[in-house]
Image 1 (cartoon, one colour):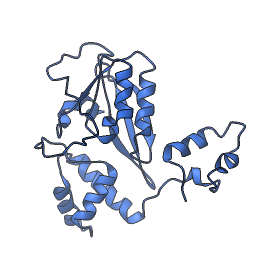
Image 2: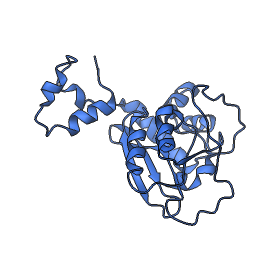
Image 3: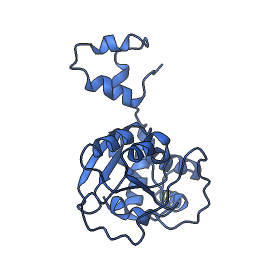
Image 4: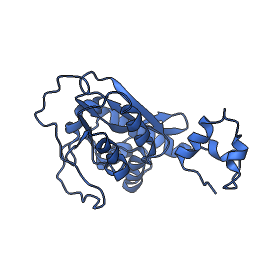
Length: 226
């Protein structure tokens, strides 16, 4: 049984130079030494389909699940609409276009107002944004979370993860705030960014939190471009 989260596995591997061996670190939960090195794999068929989805989405980022499904069928791929949705969800992608506000927010997560409408970005550390995207690998994919400065476009901090757990986002945020703090930190309403642990960090550091309107990718345009 895998007793470690992806972040805990990374910590074990990153700390391999310490005096406590990886075998010793693995003893308390009673797991095999190789477990921390495990990364989930995607089967070859799904990987091929995801590569096609990535190609279609890169060319037409405004395509939703039905457009991508029909394009896959036109290319001769044996796939249904449900599987198309599942793979797109696994890749963390959705069509970029203005959508009606039909979603129901998580009542346990506070949603902050969008503070950047009409604001002139005229200096570094005025506004920073963040978003998550995916990167294809030979045998799967990983997620990238980056925090660019909206004025200089410099990437202040970034992290990679093989899951969409919030831990790698929190690490990048904490690193980004070790240098000079921004006035405003902007994100979408993804669960990684609306959780109390994540939002508590900028609040503690007296940084204003701004969140895009639901379905409004253009609200975070500089980060989307990155």
